[in-house]
Image 1: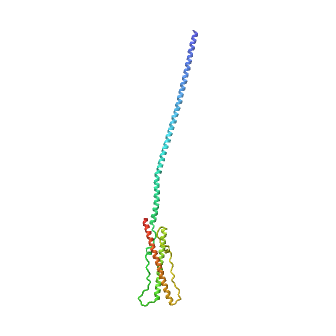
Image 2: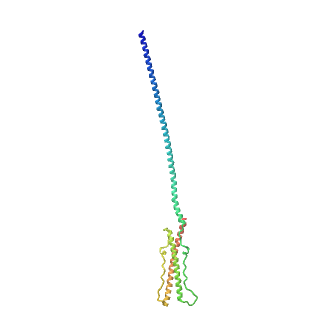
Image 3: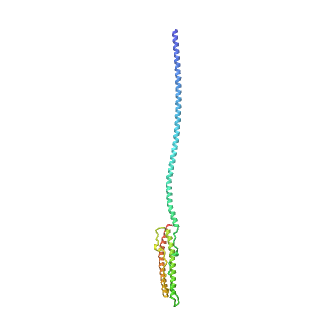
Length: 249
């Protein structure tokens, strides 16, 4: 009996130990599971936080990219739209500059000779006329000699004034295709050399007066003819200049 009781108590004690061991193992497993769950939760929270930060960062970056693309597109559109305006402005300036030059050129009148220099030169009236039946021939020759001499001086001075005025006109035209007087018509007219040396006798004096009278008469005719040719040529130049100025207005 005592042996069976002892065995029975031994079995009970062993069962209790096994139960205690099982309970401790179960508790350890429960704690381990809780620890694992906590770790997973922390890891999940970190992933979510990382993912959220990444999403926010990507969203911000994408917004920046979109804004930059919009700015770039708008800037390129502004450049493209500004190109025709710049081109039109440049072309307008190119057109305006010749117009301004034409306006300045048209408003600046070309200097032309005065009308008084272009009127015909009348022939000098140097023939000595008197109602007296008898007249000193020497006096007549001397009068006509002096008259032709002064007439030649007058027409030669007028020719010189016209030549000076034409020179200014030619300088203002500056090589434009305009008909101009011939160069020989613009050269200075030399003074005539009509003085005749004599011995001082009465016959020689009459011959001297007649020679000088004829010399100055012919000299005046030559200068007057040359003046007329220059006037005719200048008339053509003036007509061409006026047509050009009317066309430039």
